[in-house]
Length: 275
Figure 1 (cartoon, rainbow, N blue to C red):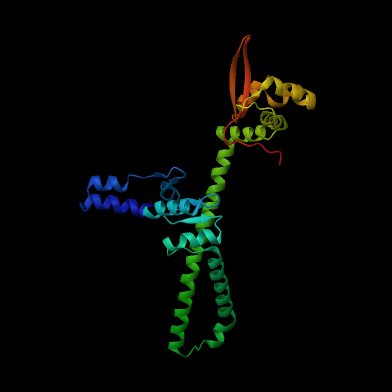
Figure 2 (figure 1 turned 90 degrees about the vertical axis):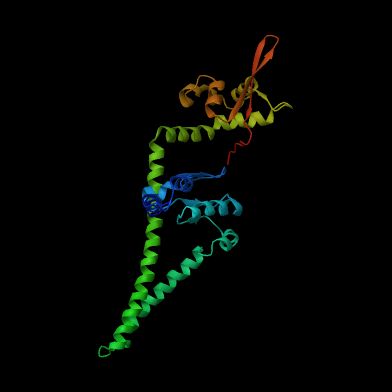
């Protein structure tokens, strides 16, 4: 929803053509729509002047279509990135105004061709003594102006979206959550955590759990420097503390005759890779 749409609703309430309940219904999903697999920010266009950009990679055509439909219902302009031709072909029948990048590239190339035509061939065709010639030239230039302004506005939206994305990324990276995620990313790709992941898989019991004690013994044999620098490099006094800090392992204290043993395993859906 943009400022124009919101203004229409407010004016309709004011002049009585829209009831408060009807307005509330229209604003039910304002400013967000939660589709389960995606949360759409309809408020972005009102705040910034341009809507969210849909990142299509990794989504099914059905998911992208659902996102586009939800945005279209709120009067949002829609832009999708990382969408192949197959994705476009499956989406375009539902959105007749959709334009694929290759089509847009052809349109820009045609504009360059028209520009060259104007630069090199306009004046020789222009009859300064003919009113009709002046009118034709004016019409031609107005048509070109309208096409160029359309492309300029679309390019401005793209640039603004990229700038907004850079701003959001920069703010995230310096935020506490951003710093935490950066540290987590480094920790999860560290040699010690990758070793713990490999050992968890290779030494797992039939129930999927592996022993931290056995993991510690194996690491001391094959990578003793990692254990020696545990506190200095990773900031943790024990493997248990390190494992908890990664947030990608489950821990379990299994009762024994003498107390308990600590077991661990990768959380469901996680795969560590040395690549």
